[in-house]
Amino acid sequence: MVGQSTGSTLGRVTVYGLLILLSIIFVMPLYWLVTNSLQLVGSSSSFLPGGLHFENYYYAATLIDYWSYTKSSIILTSISVVIPTLTSALVGFGFARLRGPGKGFLFMMMLSTMMLPGIVTQIPTYVIFFKLGFLNTYWPWLFWALGGSAFSIFLYRQFFSSFPKDLEEAARIDGCSTFRIFWNIFMPISFPVIATVSILSFNGSWGGDYLTPFMFLQDDKYPLATALFSVGYAFPGDQRIEMTQVLNAGLVMFVLPIIVVFFIGQRYLVEGVVSSAVKG
Amino acid sequence: MSQAKSTGAIITEQTARMRPASKRRSIKAALEFYLFISPWFIVFVLLGLIPLFYGLYLSFTNYAGFNMDRLKFVGFDNYIKVFTDNDAMYSLGRTMLITCINVPASMAIGLLLAILLNQNVRNIGLYRTLFFIPSIIPIVAVGTMWRSLFTKEGVINQYLVQAGLEPVDWLGYDYAMLPLFIMLMWGVGGGILIYLAGLKAVSKELYEAAAIDGATTAQRFSRITLPLITPVLFFQFIMNIIGSLQIFVQPVLLAANSNSLLSTPIRPNYVYSVHAFQQIFAFNRFGYGLALLWVLFLMILLFTIVIFTTSKLWVFYEVEQEGK
Image (cartoon, rainbow over all chains, first blue to last red; front, side, top):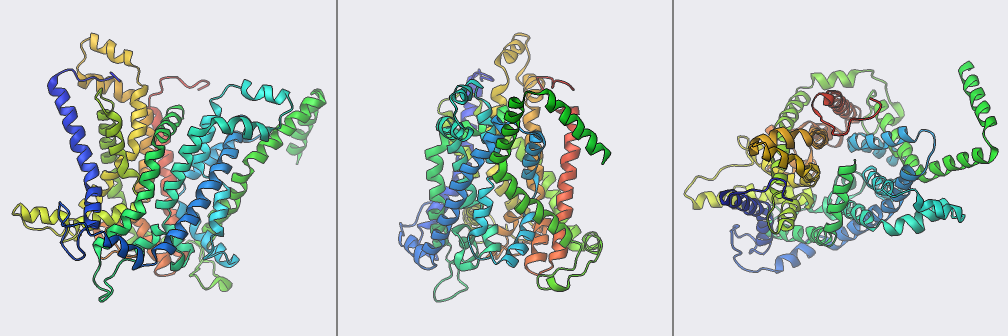
């Protein structure tokens, strides 16, 4: 975009200089994380790796029950990605293409839930689920998933609203049911928004859902996001010694799926977020 | 009663005039609408509204996790305690201070980054990705990573030592807020997509016209860019304030011997949400903790309403809203 093109050579040098400097600042801590994860356990950290101690990754996976936490992460993330991606689409379609009394009010209500601090409802939910015996099970995640997520519903609604009315009218004349219109006409052309919602839900669950498992599950059912922080890697001989290098290795393995998913889907993510932000 | 009757009468009158087929169709359409939004609505009522008001109710009781069968109604006691509890007021002050620094700083940096990314340079997509990456890294990993960089033996102190300087106790009392802000600013890239969208929406002709009239870069920014992106700034302002007032996990992750979500951050980073969380999970003071959270919720609501009502004064909409 020419918008504010920088004319002078000096201007261009400044822009490139800043871009490169900032890129270094943003990537450096991640570089440190990876370098540190390859250092000899107990050694001090340094800029260049003092060796390639891949055994740290082995320790990270075996000193704590890494696989069991990963399994829990996979279960929680699958529930929180697959189901809300579908139910949010259904609700978003309703808000975008269907009509009923109170629609505007309900939509505002849905949006305002985004402002509510989650913990205000989670603590009483914890009390209720305790009474119903749902603590230390994955049921709560299934219930939350069924309702979709406000932000995903909003993204779908923005996307579905952008199509002309003719899209469904012809199908309606042919006697197509509303659900078939949604499923066979709208969903197949909505890949960008489905991808955006899936990626955001994946990040929110795999990496962002650490507090609810802490409240609703026992430590043996913790997902990685909760476990890596609260279980910790102590030296087998002496519990007081923290093995930072091994913890870093554990973190690298934990972060990797997020980076992979981001690079696969980044094109859609940028499009999806930007288009809804501009329209919204 | 009489009102209900009269609305009923109006509806019957209207429907009588409608053709039965179209009436049936609109009822069917409404039913379909409700059917489609029902997943959200049912869960919203059962796991949103009910817990919300149940929590409000509990905040007026002495509930402490075990005394459900002999719950006592204590009126506004828990709420009075919020405002007389020194720790609560101290932590509220810290939260306000952090919000007052974090919101303008992250907005200014976010906007600056977006302006940089809006320049006409090669490989801009690569820079955008690099700026964005920190914000997708899970906060638990980010916090642990920064903490290990800032410890006494961490990388940052080693650089200082190599440069012949004294190592600094970054996570200690005197400096603890600095790592917190560095960590917050590092993750600021999440907002740049939104700023960038706002910048891209400003039409090029405006800049061209201004350039012909001899406007300087600074003038073009303050007279064209800034007013035209106020809707985006407004959105970010609200979201940032809501987020900052609820700040919780970053201070906990930076606590000196942080090894659980119940770790207590060092005093300068002892924020309000941490205090509430401690009351509930460390001391089982559910009633009091919920009162603390409701005060926070009402504060957020109040801030949001104030910002919304004053937004007319400074938010500029290119297309005047119809009917207003």
